[in-house]
Length: 144
Image 1 (cartoon, helix red, strand yellow):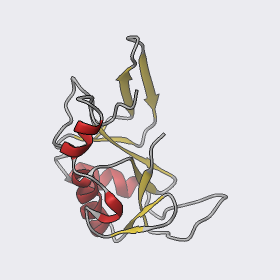
Image 2: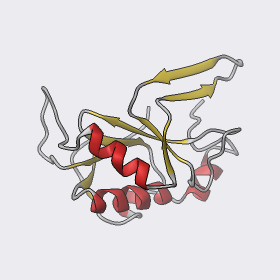
Image 3: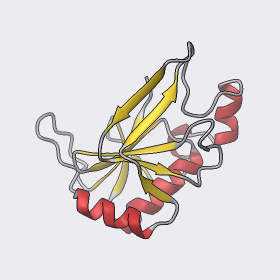
Image 4: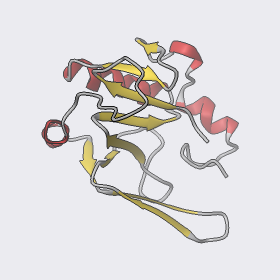
């Protein structure tokens, strides 16, 4: 399990029919204008026994310039869903990218519990290099 951060225009917690206020067409236009982002529509990773885990969704986007991401060892995924742009357990570099996107979209970055993120080191978010040491050389996204 990880902890998600969300780019959203709606900071009020809501159980049913949540909408973060960002349209998919708006997100797609933003991605098309940013050469460091690419909508793939899927995320894929290899498990510890060689099996492949694949998640398919039109909103799955890749940040190709994340400092530790590459096609061989995993991509830095962003997921558009329910009017929000979400990232699981981002590092400081990813949070900085999220804050930039949020500013461009007139939105904010909040955590799963509604806390506001305004700087890349807010709430103890660590840099990619520190996370890599914690995971003992595994790619940033691999938790097993």
